[in-house]
Image (cartoon, rainbow, N blue to C red):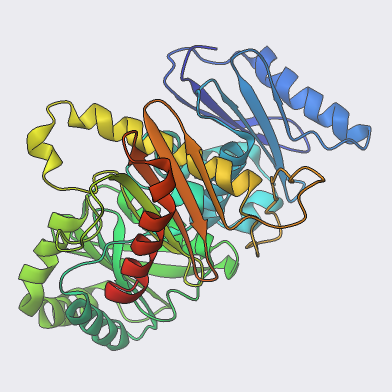
Length: 418
Protein backbone atom coordinates (compact mmCIF):
# COMPACT_ATOMS: atom_id res chain seq x y z
CA UNK A 1 0.00 0.00 0.00
CA UNK A 2 0.99 3.60 -0.53
CA UNK A 3 2.27 5.48 2.50
CA UNK A 4 -0.49 7.06 4.67
CA UNK A 5 -3.26 5.40 2.66
CA UNK A 6 -6.48 4.07 4.21
CA UNK A 7 -9.06 1.79 2.56
CA UNK A 8 -12.47 1.06 4.05
CA UNK A 9 -14.50 -1.85 2.69
CA UNK A 10 -18.12 -2.72 3.42
CA UNK A 11 -19.50 -6.10 2.35
CA UNK A 12 -22.68 -8.11 2.80
CA UNK A 13 -21.73 -10.90 5.21
CA UNK A 14 -23.91 -13.61 3.68
CA UNK A 15 -22.82 -13.15 0.06
CA UNK A 16 -19.53 -11.27 0.30
CA UNK A 17 -20.81 -8.72 -2.24
CA UNK A 18 -19.00 -5.37 -1.84
CA UNK A 19 -21.42 -2.57 -0.88
CA UNK A 20 -18.89 0.26 -1.09
CA UNK A 21 -15.19 1.10 -0.87
CA UNK A 22 -13.96 4.44 0.49
CA UNK A 23 -10.34 5.54 0.63
CA UNK A 24 -8.00 8.25 1.84
CA UNK A 25 -4.62 9.30 0.48
CA UNK A 26 -4.48 6.96 -2.51
CA UNK A 27 -5.54 7.17 -6.14
CA UNK A 28 -5.44 3.40 -6.65
CA UNK A 29 -8.60 1.34 -6.46
CA UNK A 30 -8.57 -2.07 -4.80
CA UNK A 31 -9.07 -4.92 -7.24
CA UNK A 32 -11.95 -7.34 -6.76
CA UNK A 33 -9.46 -10.15 -6.10
CA UNK A 34 -7.92 -8.24 -3.18
CA UNK A 35 -11.35 -7.45 -1.74
CA UNK A 36 -12.37 -11.09 -2.15
CA UNK A 37 -9.19 -12.33 -0.46
CA UNK A 38 -9.63 -10.01 2.54
CA UNK A 39 -13.22 -11.14 3.01
CA UNK A 40 -12.41 -14.76 2.25
CA UNK A 41 -9.80 -15.14 4.97
CA UNK A 42 -12.28 -13.71 7.48
CA UNK A 43 -15.02 -16.12 6.35
CA UNK A 44 -12.58 -19.05 6.51
CA UNK A 45 -11.63 -18.13 10.07
CA UNK A 46 -15.31 -17.95 11.08
CA UNK A 47 -15.95 -21.38 9.60
CA UNK A 48 -13.12 -22.70 11.78
CA UNK A 49 -14.59 -21.00 14.90
CA UNK A 50 -11.72 -18.51 14.94
CA UNK A 51 -12.36 -14.82 15.57
CA UNK A 52 -10.09 -12.90 13.20
CA UNK A 53 -9.92 -9.25 14.29
CA UNK A 54 -6.60 -7.83 13.10
CA UNK A 55 -3.25 -8.50 11.47
CA UNK A 56 -0.35 -6.43 10.16
CA UNK A 57 2.32 -6.62 7.48
CA UNK A 58 5.49 -4.60 7.10
CA UNK A 59 3.69 -1.31 6.50
CA UNK A 60 -0.04 -2.08 6.66
CA UNK A 61 -2.48 -2.89 9.44
CA UNK A 62 -5.75 -4.70 8.63
CA UNK A 63 -8.79 -4.89 10.92
CA UNK A 64 -12.00 -6.88 10.39
CA UNK A 65 -15.32 -6.39 12.15
CA UNK A 66 -18.68 -8.13 11.68
CA UNK A 67 -21.90 -6.40 12.75
CA UNK A 68 -25.13 -8.30 13.45
CA UNK A 69 -23.91 -11.17 11.24
CA UNK A 70 -25.02 -9.04 8.30
CA UNK A 71 -22.38 -6.39 7.54
CA UNK A 72 -18.63 -6.96 7.36
CA UNK A 73 -16.35 -3.93 7.59
CA UNK A 74 -12.64 -4.10 6.75
CA UNK A 75 -10.11 -1.31 7.10
CA UNK A 76 -6.53 -1.30 5.81
CA UNK A 77 -4.21 1.48 6.93
CA UNK A 78 -0.56 2.26 6.25
CA UNK A 79 -0.59 5.36 8.46
CA UNK A 80 2.18 5.36 11.04
CA UNK A 81 -0.20 6.22 13.90
CA UNK A 82 -2.72 3.48 13.08
CA UNK A 83 -3.42 0.98 15.85
CA UNK A 84 -5.92 -1.78 16.50
CA UNK A 85 -7.61 0.48 19.05
CA UNK A 86 -8.07 3.44 16.69
CA UNK A 87 -9.09 1.29 13.70
CA UNK A 88 -11.73 -0.58 15.70
CA UNK A 89 -13.10 2.79 16.83
CA UNK A 90 -13.21 3.80 13.17
CA UNK A 91 -15.26 0.73 12.25
CA UNK A 92 -17.65 1.34 15.15
CA UNK A 93 -18.12 4.90 13.96
CA UNK A 94 -18.70 3.81 10.37
CA UNK A 95 -21.35 1.24 11.25
CA UNK A 96 -22.97 3.72 13.64
CA UNK A 97 -23.06 6.26 10.79
CA UNK A 98 -24.77 3.73 8.54
CA UNK A 99 -27.42 3.02 11.17
CA UNK A 100 -27.89 6.74 11.89
CA UNK A 101 -28.67 7.54 8.26
CA UNK A 102 -30.54 4.50 6.89
CA UNK A 103 -31.59 2.48 9.97
CA UNK A 104 -30.72 -0.94 11.32
CA UNK A 105 -33.47 -2.86 9.48
CA UNK A 106 -31.98 -2.02 6.09
CA UNK A 107 -28.61 -3.40 7.24
CA UNK A 108 -29.76 -6.58 8.97
CA UNK A 109 -32.48 -7.62 6.50
CA UNK A 110 -30.82 -7.16 3.13
CA UNK A 111 -33.45 -7.91 0.48
CA UNK A 112 -31.99 -6.05 -2.47
CA UNK A 113 -28.24 -5.49 -2.58
CA UNK A 114 -28.36 -2.93 -5.38
CA UNK A 115 -30.95 -0.87 -3.56
CA UNK A 116 -28.86 -0.99 -0.38
CA UNK A 117 -25.81 0.21 -2.32
CA UNK A 118 -27.82 3.18 -3.55
CA UNK A 119 -29.17 3.96 -0.07
CA UNK A 120 -25.69 3.85 1.44
CA UNK A 121 -24.53 6.73 -0.76
CA UNK A 122 -26.31 9.04 1.68
CA UNK A 123 -23.73 7.97 4.30
CA UNK A 124 -20.62 8.74 2.26
CA UNK A 125 -19.96 12.29 3.46
CA UNK A 126 -20.30 11.29 7.10
CA UNK A 127 -18.17 8.16 6.63
CA UNK A 128 -15.50 10.10 4.72
CA UNK A 129 -15.31 12.63 7.56
CA UNK A 130 -14.04 9.83 9.82
CA UNK A 131 -11.32 8.94 7.30
CA UNK A 132 -10.00 12.46 6.74
CA UNK A 133 -7.76 14.58 8.96
CA UNK A 134 -9.92 16.39 11.46
CA UNK A 135 -9.51 18.97 14.18
CA UNK A 136 -11.85 17.04 16.49
CA UNK A 137 -11.14 14.04 18.73
CA UNK A 138 -14.64 12.61 19.13
CA UNK A 139 -14.05 9.85 16.58
CA UNK A 140 -11.36 8.42 18.87
CA UNK A 141 -12.78 9.21 22.32
CA UNK A 142 -16.41 8.42 21.36
CA UNK A 143 -17.27 11.64 23.18
CA UNK A 144 -18.59 14.84 21.68
CA UNK A 145 -16.14 17.73 21.24
CA UNK A 146 -17.22 20.81 23.20
CA UNK A 147 -16.49 24.52 23.57
CA UNK A 148 -16.48 26.58 26.76
CA UNK A 149 -17.93 29.92 25.65
CA UNK A 150 -17.83 33.20 27.52
CA UNK A 151 -21.64 33.38 27.66
CA UNK A 152 -22.47 29.72 28.13
CA UNK A 153 -25.11 30.37 30.81
CA UNK A 154 -27.03 32.80 28.57
CA UNK A 155 -26.86 30.46 25.57
CA UNK A 156 -27.90 27.48 27.70
CA UNK A 157 -31.01 29.33 28.88
CA UNK A 158 -31.92 30.29 25.31
CA UNK A 159 -31.42 26.72 24.15
CA UNK A 160 -33.60 25.24 26.90
CA UNK A 161 -36.43 27.69 26.16
CA UNK A 162 -36.14 27.24 22.39
CA UNK A 163 -36.12 23.43 22.64
CA UNK A 164 -39.18 23.43 24.90
CA UNK A 165 -41.04 25.75 22.52
CA UNK A 166 -40.18 23.33 19.68
CA UNK A 167 -41.98 20.55 21.60
CA UNK A 168 -38.77 18.63 22.35
CA UNK A 169 -36.45 17.78 25.22
CA UNK A 170 -33.43 17.17 22.98
CA UNK A 171 -31.61 20.28 21.82
CA UNK A 172 -28.01 21.21 21.04
CA UNK A 173 -26.07 24.33 20.01
CA UNK A 174 -23.05 23.64 17.77
CA UNK A 175 -20.22 26.00 16.75
CA UNK A 176 -17.67 24.78 14.21
CA UNK A 177 -18.81 21.18 14.77
CA UNK A 178 -18.34 21.45 18.57
CA UNK A 179 -21.08 21.59 21.20
CA UNK A 180 -21.50 24.89 23.05
CA UNK A 181 -24.60 23.91 25.03
CA UNK A 182 -27.07 21.03 25.13
CA UNK A 183 -30.20 20.13 27.06
CA UNK A 184 -30.08 17.68 29.95
CA UNK A 185 -31.76 14.91 27.96
CA UNK A 186 -29.42 15.43 25.00
CA UNK A 187 -26.58 14.38 27.29
CA UNK A 188 -28.55 11.26 28.26
CA UNK A 189 -28.24 9.92 24.73
CA UNK A 190 -25.42 7.39 24.33
CA UNK A 191 -21.96 8.83 23.78
CA UNK A 192 -21.83 7.42 20.24
CA UNK A 193 -25.21 8.92 19.33
CA UNK A 194 -24.28 12.40 20.57
CA UNK A 195 -20.96 12.24 18.72
CA UNK A 196 -22.51 10.97 15.48
CA UNK A 197 -25.24 13.63 15.44
CA UNK A 198 -22.67 16.41 15.76
CA UNK A 199 -20.43 14.91 13.08
CA UNK A 200 -23.46 14.50 10.79
CA UNK A 201 -24.35 18.19 11.07
CA UNK A 202 -20.71 19.17 10.45
CA UNK A 203 -20.48 16.91 7.38
CA UNK A 204 -23.56 18.36 5.65
CA UNK A 205 -23.32 21.40 3.33
CA UNK A 206 -24.23 24.70 5.04
CA UNK A 207 -27.95 25.35 4.96
CA UNK A 208 -30.30 27.81 6.63
CA UNK A 209 -32.53 24.94 7.83
CA UNK A 210 -32.90 21.18 7.52
CA UNK A 211 -35.43 18.49 8.34
CA UNK A 212 -33.31 15.33 8.35
CA UNK A 213 -34.54 11.84 9.35
CA UNK A 214 -32.12 10.03 11.69
CA UNK A 215 -32.08 6.73 13.55
CA UNK A 216 -30.44 6.56 16.97
CA UNK A 217 -28.07 3.53 16.81
CA UNK A 218 -28.85 2.47 20.38
CA UNK A 219 -31.96 4.37 21.45
CA UNK A 220 -34.07 3.97 18.31
CA UNK A 221 -32.26 2.03 15.54
CA UNK A 222 -35.43 1.08 13.63
CA UNK A 223 -37.75 4.08 14.11
CA UNK A 224 -36.56 7.43 12.72
CA UNK A 225 -36.67 10.78 14.48
CA UNK A 226 -36.56 14.20 12.87
CA UNK A 227 -33.37 16.21 13.28
CA UNK A 228 -34.18 19.89 12.73
CA UNK A 229 -31.19 22.20 12.27
CA UNK A 230 -31.10 25.97 11.86
CA UNK A 231 -28.10 28.13 11.01
CA UNK A 232 -28.15 31.03 13.47
CA UNK A 233 -24.96 32.69 12.16
CA UNK A 234 -22.45 31.19 9.70
CA UNK A 235 -20.74 28.32 11.49
CA UNK A 236 -23.25 28.09 14.37
CA UNK A 237 -26.28 25.77 14.24
CA UNK A 238 -29.00 24.85 16.69
CA UNK A 239 -30.33 21.29 16.48
CA UNK A 240 -33.51 19.71 17.83
CA UNK A 241 -34.58 16.06 17.85
CA UNK A 242 -38.35 15.75 17.62
CA UNK A 243 -41.27 13.66 16.43
CA UNK A 244 -43.88 14.39 13.73
CA UNK A 245 -44.50 17.90 15.03
CA UNK A 246 -43.81 20.79 14.86
CA UNK A 247 -43.20 21.56 11.21
CA UNK A 248 -39.87 22.93 10.04
CA UNK A 249 -41.57 26.09 8.76
CA UNK A 250 -43.25 26.77 12.09
CA UNK A 251 -40.02 26.54 14.06
CA UNK A 252 -38.08 28.57 11.51
CA UNK A 253 -40.66 31.33 11.11
CA UNK A 254 -41.96 31.63 14.66
CA UNK A 255 -39.22 30.49 17.05
CA UNK A 256 -35.70 30.96 15.64
CA UNK A 257 -35.70 34.75 15.45
CA UNK A 258 -37.70 35.10 18.67
CA UNK A 259 -35.24 33.19 20.80
CA UNK A 260 -31.89 33.70 19.07
CA UNK A 261 -31.88 37.23 17.64
CA UNK A 262 -31.21 38.81 21.07
CA UNK A 263 -28.03 36.74 21.49
CA UNK A 264 -26.38 37.13 18.07
CA UNK A 265 -23.20 38.62 19.54
CA UNK A 266 -22.63 35.75 22.03
CA UNK A 267 -23.26 33.30 19.18
CA UNK A 268 -20.57 34.93 17.04
CA UNK A 269 -18.22 34.95 20.01
CA UNK A 270 -18.47 31.12 20.14
CA UNK A 271 -16.59 30.90 16.84
CA UNK A 272 -13.72 32.97 18.20
CA UNK A 273 -13.00 30.37 20.91
CA UNK A 274 -13.80 27.21 18.98
CA UNK A 275 -10.19 26.64 17.81
CA UNK A 276 -8.84 26.73 21.36
CA UNK A 277 -12.14 25.35 22.74
CA UNK A 278 -12.04 27.67 25.77
CA UNK A 279 -11.56 31.43 26.34
CA UNK A 280 -8.15 33.07 26.42
CA UNK A 281 -8.88 34.04 30.02
CA UNK A 282 -8.39 30.40 31.10
CA UNK A 283 -4.77 30.32 32.36
CA UNK A 284 -2.86 27.33 30.96
CA UNK A 285 0.74 26.53 31.95
CA UNK A 286 3.11 27.85 29.27
CA UNK A 287 4.69 24.41 28.80
CA UNK A 288 1.41 22.78 27.71
CA UNK A 289 1.11 22.54 23.90
CA UNK A 290 -2.05 20.43 23.64
CA UNK A 291 -4.82 19.31 25.95
CA UNK A 292 -7.59 16.70 25.93
CA UNK A 293 -10.04 16.60 28.84
CA UNK A 294 -12.83 14.01 28.91
CA UNK A 295 -15.86 14.28 31.19
CA UNK A 296 -16.60 10.61 31.83
CA UNK A 297 -20.09 11.18 33.24
CA UNK A 298 -21.48 13.28 30.37
CA UNK A 299 -19.30 11.72 27.62
CA UNK A 300 -18.05 15.09 26.42
CA UNK A 301 -14.52 16.31 25.79
CA UNK A 302 -12.49 19.50 25.57
CA UNK A 303 -9.61 19.48 23.11
CA UNK A 304 -7.05 21.94 21.83
CA UNK A 305 -3.69 21.76 20.07
CA UNK A 306 -3.23 25.51 20.40
CA UNK A 307 -3.28 26.11 24.14
CA UNK A 308 -1.79 29.60 23.80
CA UNK A 309 -3.57 31.97 21.35
CA UNK A 310 -0.49 34.18 20.87
CA UNK A 311 1.20 31.35 18.94
CA UNK A 312 -0.46 32.28 15.65
CA UNK A 313 1.73 35.41 15.54
CA UNK A 314 4.98 33.86 16.72
CA UNK A 315 5.11 30.69 14.62
CA UNK A 316 4.98 30.92 10.78
CA UNK A 317 4.82 27.13 10.48
CA UNK A 318 1.97 26.84 12.96
CA UNK A 319 -0.33 24.77 10.75
CA UNK A 320 2.22 21.96 10.41
CA UNK A 321 3.06 22.17 14.11
CA UNK A 322 -0.61 21.84 15.08
CA UNK A 323 -1.02 18.76 12.87
CA UNK A 324 2.01 17.15 14.51
CA UNK A 325 0.69 17.94 17.98
CA UNK A 326 -2.70 16.47 17.12
CA UNK A 327 -1.07 13.27 15.87
CA UNK A 328 1.10 13.00 19.00
CA UNK A 329 -1.87 13.57 21.32
CA UNK A 330 -4.02 11.01 19.50
CA UNK A 331 -1.20 8.46 19.68
CA UNK A 332 -0.71 9.05 23.40
CA UNK A 333 -4.46 8.79 24.05
CA UNK A 334 -4.56 5.48 22.18
CA UNK A 335 -1.55 4.18 24.13
CA UNK A 336 -3.00 5.18 27.50
CA UNK A 337 -6.51 3.86 26.85
CA UNK A 338 -5.36 0.54 25.38
CA UNK A 339 -2.69 -0.20 28.00
CA UNK A 340 -3.20 1.73 31.22
CA UNK A 341 -6.63 3.31 31.66
CA UNK A 342 -9.20 0.53 31.40
CA UNK A 343 -12.75 1.54 30.46
CA UNK A 344 -15.39 1.22 33.15
CA UNK A 345 -18.29 0.87 30.72
CA UNK A 346 -18.94 0.48 27.02
CA UNK A 347 -21.95 1.65 25.04
CA UNK A 348 -23.68 -0.88 22.84
CA UNK A 349 -23.62 -4.61 22.32
CA UNK A 350 -21.18 -4.49 19.43
CA UNK A 351 -18.44 -2.65 21.32
CA UNK A 352 -15.25 -4.54 22.01
CA UNK A 353 -12.43 -3.82 24.39
CA UNK A 354 -8.88 -3.74 23.07
CA UNK A 355 -6.82 -3.28 26.19
CA UNK A 356 -3.38 -4.71 26.79
CA UNK A 357 -3.12 -6.02 30.37
CA UNK A 358 -0.28 -5.13 32.67
CA UNK A 359 2.43 -7.75 33.20
CA UNK A 360 1.55 -10.26 35.91
CA UNK A 361 3.72 -8.43 38.44
CA UNK A 362 1.33 -5.45 38.43
CA UNK A 363 -1.66 -5.90 40.73
CA UNK A 364 -3.05 -2.36 40.49
CA UNK A 365 -4.73 -0.26 37.80
CA UNK A 366 -2.92 2.88 36.73
CA UNK A 367 -4.31 6.36 37.37
CA UNK A 368 -1.44 8.32 35.83
CA UNK A 369 1.08 7.66 33.07
CA UNK A 370 3.60 9.58 30.98
CA UNK A 371 5.94 9.26 28.02
CA UNK A 372 9.09 11.18 27.08
CA UNK A 373 10.57 11.70 23.61
CA UNK A 374 13.13 14.02 22.06
CA UNK A 375 10.45 16.39 20.70
CA UNK A 376 7.73 16.38 23.36
CA UNK A 377 6.44 14.81 26.57
CA UNK A 378 2.98 13.48 27.42
CA UNK A 379 1.14 13.03 30.70
CA UNK A 380 -2.18 11.28 31.36
CA UNK A 381 -4.36 11.33 34.46
CA UNK A 382 -7.51 9.40 35.34
CA UNK A 383 -9.92 10.50 38.09
CA UNK A 384 -13.39 9.35 39.00
CA UNK A 385 -15.02 12.02 36.83
CA UNK A 386 -12.39 12.95 34.19
CA UNK A 387 -9.59 11.83 31.94
CA UNK A 388 -6.85 14.37 31.22
CA UNK A 389 -4.15 14.09 28.55
CA UNK A 390 -1.46 16.77 28.16
CA UNK A 391 1.21 17.28 25.52
CA UNK A 392 4.21 19.24 26.83
CA UNK A 393 7.16 20.85 25.11
CA UNK A 394 10.38 18.88 25.51
CA UNK A 395 11.97 21.45 27.83
CA UNK A 396 9.36 20.98 30.59
CA UNK A 397 11.04 19.05 33.46
CA UNK A 398 9.67 15.52 33.71
CA UNK A 399 9.31 15.75 37.48
CA UNK A 400 7.02 18.80 37.17
CA UNK A 401 4.44 17.25 34.80
CA UNK A 402 2.41 15.67 37.59
CA UNK A 403 2.05 18.95 39.50
CA UNK A 404 1.08 20.81 36.31
CA UNK A 405 -1.48 18.12 35.45
CA UNK A 406 -3.01 18.34 38.94
CA UNK A 407 -3.31 22.14 38.67
CA UNK A 408 -4.86 21.83 35.20
CA UNK A 409 -7.38 19.27 36.44
CA UNK A 410 -8.30 21.58 39.32
CA UNK A 411 -8.67 24.47 36.89
CA UNK A 412 -11.30 22.66 34.82
CA UNK A 413 -13.07 21.04 37.75
CA UNK A 414 -13.43 24.11 39.99
CA UNK A 415 -12.50 27.43 38.38
CA UNK A 416 -13.91 26.68 34.90
CA UNK A 417 -16.01 23.56 35.55
CA UNK A 418 -16.38 21.18 32.65
